[in-house]
Image (cartoon, rainbow over all chains, first blue to last red; front, side):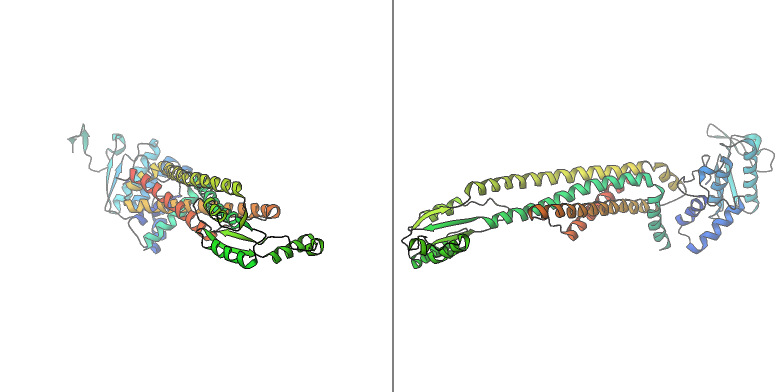
Length: 136
Length: 289
């Protein structure tokens, strides 16, 4: 899950935030360090593991939240308006990042109001209005 | 196993992460436990103090001058059978003279040519715990014995001390109860407030899939540590204060407070941890679905 408002825990650094997702599923302690570092590297936040969420920009926080979702190696990522709180350039970068994740074999289901951002990228788009399907 | 260890460590790390709220919780635990501790020490020591006074209650019985030592001894035996009498000591005419000699350095025999002192006896009364000691019936019984000429005792003083002690016992019992209830409310509310301020954190944990146990354990560990640290601080403060008071009191009056360190330490830590745990458990339960 990736949320519009990131849902990172303010009281701990990026490493602990991402590691928490692994602790929740009872992952082996020995594995955790490597997996967290790898996942931070994947989203372009290598070297920022000691930073606290409030020290990062909105785009970086969203990357961290994507890293937290990815670290569990899920089959599907649900992203609820991940670009809702960031500027257009960062939004574009985040979509690119999700595309990379998708190319590596993880399905991504992303909700967005920003049609311009997702159209013409060769992905399936489902349009909803008032809870009804309008176009597939 | 790894996960449980992680949760325990997480609880102690939260103490540092949330140091400001922890400070508030620890302070409220500290303050209320200190109050309870003071009451406990007072309760223990008034007992000791009143027993010390009771040990001093003695009735002095003087016999007729004409009574021989043998007759006096019989009366003393008689007195010993009165309920409420702990022990008796016979002071013969000769003993009285020796006492006079040692105190005033005068030989009465040389001065008067005869021994003017009557035989007498000291009666110690039974120590009664937590019950008003009544000496009046004992005095009446002794007075009614033939051959007894006079009975001396600190009657009014004894009555006063006893009645104050009774009032004090009653007051301290109610006071302890009230303080305990208030402290439970204060501590559990402070702990609850610290958890209310972590509402967002609990929500975020739920969103990333944490089970309710996973969310609760660190909070409970944190609360336990609040209770323990508060208790340790209260115990240290109490011990230092008692030592300080003793250092001053014993010089002036020769009285010292006793502190049953282990009992006080255990009960205060127990109360602290228990109340903190209950408070935090109740607060988290409100946020978990």
